[in-house]
Length: 412
Image (tube, rainbow, N blue to C red; front, side, top):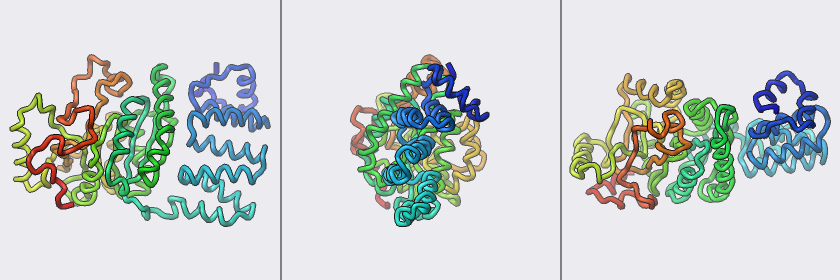
């Protein structure tokens, strides 16, 4: 059976007829969605457009927003149904999913040839390169996911409950399983893909813009984080980065917006923020200790209910475009979170956290999580707990009433 990696090698050499022969002998492994598109490309090159169409449609069922597949579909539709139908299909996709830059260029160039200047103008005006930073929402939520459908469902449900979503757009990137991953990760990836597809319409009812892309080069969590944030930072002033097991409270985005507008910046002491807290479950920690921390935060002239640390949490962090440009190389090192923390410590910058958490990390011991994958269940020593660790996390600061903390954003 020809694997996706072998297909890529054949494609690089232009061995389209060879790929087609393997396909006709049923010797293609379609476990990876890109395999559909490699074979479809080979069939286009060998003029078998009907079979190419079937494979592209199968691939799109698994990955509806895949831009490569959409390019192939446009080629096939043009050949089989004519340019007008192909353009109508691509136009509909661009309106519903936002402008993919290369797809927009394909549509515009074809539209000009057909004399369709009005729609060419409409798609062109929606392109990110036209608007640059002039977007209606100044900030973005960047959500990185892979194969944990159960925790991701909780994250998406919490986003649907959040207030002040008008200040953020939502971007989701899903890593693709590599040949090194076992079947359980492939199954988990498919479940996540299906889950996101089922939530897209609901999320678009909550956020002005929702974008979902698949990352077909799974190079690890740190490089994918950089890929996502590099994309986001092209169009926004700042971001909230979330992993797929970070569940938010209703007012989490209110705190995130405050930090981005008022605390985090190049000239500030604070280069990062987070919605998590480093305090542990109240059953394990003396309540007076927590209250002393609140009192110390106020004595240090910090915003009520906030305190500082000298590291950057990996699951959830907040920052600006200018700061990301300076630190993105460190965050994409093989040990990205640790490397970024070492750098931040070396230059004396801090992260601001809420004492009462606005997010909780549920993924440390997940069987499909990064920690378990690297260390095994027995090897995971650091377990995160929060005093908001109830099943219903839709309530926030009033769930645990500490004097003054429910007013931490009084100056916002």
